[in-house]
Length: 288
Length: 262
Image 1: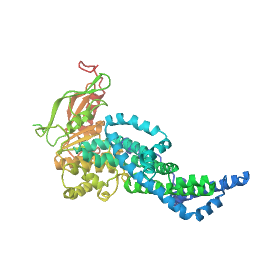
Image 2 (image 1 turned 90 degrees about the vertical axis):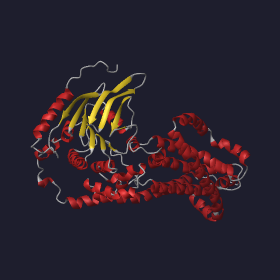
Image 3 (image 1 turned 180 degrees about the vertical axis):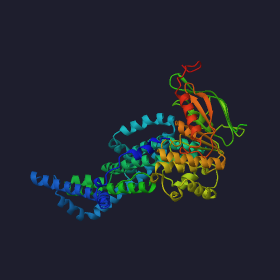
Image 4 (image 1 turned 60 degrees about the horizontal axis):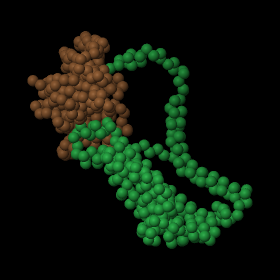
């Protein structure tokens, strides 16, 4: 053990007292607290500020270029459309939300176990990964007509589209999370001679959760997109349908209003996933 | 009479295309009950490999290890393992981390709560039972890890450089605690270290290993009273002597041997 450290302490020249700041306590405390406070406020302030800036830019461009209201409605017109059509937007929004949540839930049910199996088994990984990559490379929009032929005009093909889009990031997250079990924890647990089930439930799944949630966060945005793509064809309900329909009547304000609702759904779902993560993975570093 | 017996153990690991590396070559070691044995040697001398074979984490290519008369075929319940990393589960509070070994042993954790609290107290962690690992310093984490390796009251403690990642002060503090715990509870300890001072301070016998292939070069007996600290002058002569001897052994020029893997 290194005694050199102890010996060095007295030999280092004592710092003259007058060099030190006169009131370190009063100087240190506010300096340490302010960034923390600032950050918490900034977290809500910054997105609002960016949104305001975006709306300002939108309005400015419209005024400068003298764009027609049909081509680009003003923020005020979109706002009016939102309030005029609130019942309509609510009804269609709920449909899209339902398809998204059902599809996302199904995707989790399929993708997490599959990712876990891929993470565990080298054979399954090598056998399935090329197929999965190939499937992922297929443009999902191209599948929409097929899904309608297979599943009809109901909710099913939309849900299927949601599953198709949100499935892959969850598989990838789960597989890489399971593969990345920290070696020191694994060795420690192995030294206790656990059953394979204990090894999985007490260590590997828990340790994979942060990466699974990375997949889930990516997937939730894709899930909303999947629902809208699904509604573009063969649908009579949902925000995707509303957007195509309002395009047909050149009601761009309503189309934009639908987009706003879509964004709100997307953002809300994303934050719900984040909240669940904080609940289930409290040990990870969540900085505001 | 040996309690823990390493009998003619060899370990060959395959590194790439047919180039086998002899990690351990026909190694024998007898350890008495209650004895504290440290393993020292340069990197690659196979001391960690030997420890893992004794722990039942990896199989020997040839030879056998027996503890208390029964062969080691897999990790055993009368053995506690402590590694260089604390390896605490980050989602568990300190107390639940300490109680972890009982879960795979089919023992009721509640019966051991008092023992866990007692261990935490002896290692100076009594106020930290409900804290999470990230709230603890490195030294405190390693103390918790020590408690975990002792919770099921194992006869044998296997330690792989457990204090290597700690600062000098914490290291000395923990080695004094470890000596006390082992003396009180009559543990048989095998302790791998890079540090000659640590090896000498803790050991009844120091096993000096040399690499390529890993084997025992010499065993040095340390005959000094316990508990030992670096500050105690009454046996500092003995310890200094042993340190010098070990240093010489470790820095000796290695002669190429017949039987080493090509």
